[in-house]
Length: 261
Figure 1 (cartoon, rainbow, N blue to C red):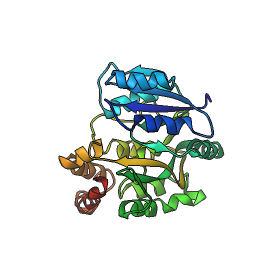
Figure 2: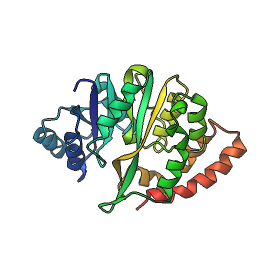
Figure 3: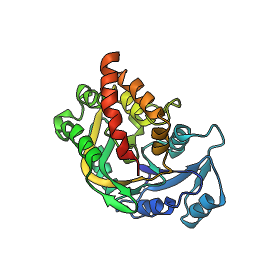
């Protein structure tokens, strides 16, 4: 149990938080579970008490990346999964993550395929999911898991890695994972930085978690005010000349519609 920690980042009063907690408690391999929040309230404290989950309040600067980094630090090392409050995990997620991490000499991150949850229904296939799975095909080849060149080529066309599916091997990573200047591409920025390090990106093609798409999500908000498009262009500039970044950015932006209900 001490090797892995699920960190639930709770915000305000999500009607899906309890489903997330239950999916973590139902894992076939038991793990430490903690909760962090920068918006403490009776709803969050009540669920933490009901399921006997330690709840830590971020009394510093609040925000998505600030809360993620706060939770990452509170996990105290080992393997760490930052669970988003609206999402759920299949019961074998952790077992497969630990198996993959143990198989690598120098693991950096483990991540799995996922399905979407829209209006309470599981969506296993759509255009966005197909594109992401196609992008990740090279990482299904065992000899490529340690290839910096391969992972950076994948990330140069976008981010197919589902952030809440990631399990971090914290001993091989920096103390701070996320920077605080992005609102929609903070995870892509983190993968880009981690991709430069020697070690393994461990991709599991099984859909072992459900990512919820709804109107109140931060992703939908960022798309609505066009900030995401600007951030994506900045990310493409990390890999490409300006004119190429603009061209890819225009094509990539068309996929944003798949992240809205």
